[in-house]
Amino acid sequence: MAAPSPPPTRITLIGAGTIGLSFAALYLDRPPKSNPIIITIHDTRPDIEDYILKILPSYLTNTGEPHASSNQDLVTKYLSNGLLNIDSDLPSAVARASIIQEQGPENLAFKASLWPEIETHCPPACLLWSSTSGIPASSQSSNMKDPTRLLVVHPWNPPHVFPLLEIVPTPRTNPEMVDRTLSFLRSIDRIPILLRKETTGFVANRLAFALLREAIHLVSSGVASPQDVDMIVQNSMGPRWAIAGPFKSYQAGGGEAGLEGFFKNIGGTVQDCWDDAGRVNVGEGGWEEDLFRQTKEAYGVVDTGKRDELSRRVLDAAKEDSIG
Image 1 (spheres, rainbow, N blue to C red):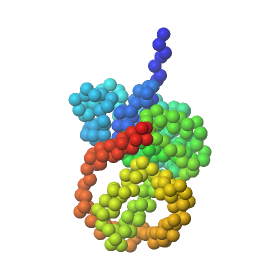
Image 2 (cartoon, helix red, strand yellow):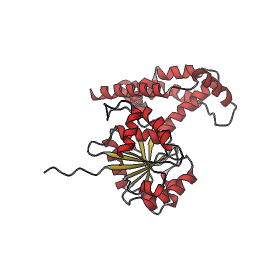
Image 3 (cartoon, rainbow, N blue to C red):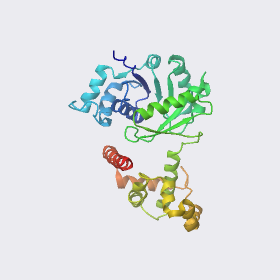
C-alpha cells in the first residue's frame, strides 16, 4: 500500500511588490521534491489580481508546465487550480500557513505592528520570515508575544534568479525555526547562509554598498565615468567572484603562501588604497545630481529581463563548473 502523500507547504506572502512576486515565482517554479507548494498572496492594493497577471508571468521560467502556451496562461491556471491564491484579509490569509514571509514597506513601525497581528491568527508551528533589506528581526519582534519565532530571510534581488538567502536569527530565535528554515530552502535548491549575529544590512548588502561607495568616490573625483567603472567590474572581479569570493580569490593570489603571502607582497598598496578610500555620504557633498545624471544618460531604463537572463547563464555556468 502506497504511503499517503505529505501535506502541501502553504506559504503566505505579505506584500506583492517586486520581491514578493519574485518569491512567488521561485516557489511556483521550484516546488520541493517531496510535496507541492500552495501560495497565498496578501496585498491591499485594489487591482492586485490584474497586477499579478501583468507582472508575475515575466518572472516564471515555465519549467513546471512545459505545455502551457504562455506564462500568463500558466498564472491563470495557478489561480484557477488553487496553487496561487489572493486574500486581502490578513487573518484568513495566514490562518493555514506553514510559512509566512513578509515583504512590506521598509519601515520598522509597520513591521513591528504587523507581526503581533500575524502571530494572533497563524498556526503555532508556522515559520515567520521577514525579507527586510536591513531591519533586524530583534527590532521587528519587539511587540510579539513570542519573539523566538521570527527570523530574517534576506534575498539577493531577484530571488527567483539568485540562489543566495541570508538567514539572520535574533539571539532569542528558536533554533528549531532556523533548522526548519534551512531545510526547506535547501529543498528548493537555494543556498541559505546562516549569519552568526545580526548586523545592519546583513553581509551581501554591506559588501555591495562598500563597493558602491568607492565607485561613487572614483566617479565624483573624476577618475572614471560610471560606464568605465562598470566595464572594469564586469571584465575583472565580476566574473571572478562568480567562481571565488574575496577570501578564496586572494588566497589564490598569494600563491603557495596564500592570503598571508598576498599581504606580505602588496599589503602596503592595500593599506594605501584603504587610507585613500572615498567617504561619500548620502545627502552630503553635492555628488548626487551629477552622478545621477551621468548614470541616467548612460543607461536610461535598464532592461532587467535581459539582465536576469544573463545572470542565470553566469550562475548556471559556475554551477556546472563546480559540479564537474
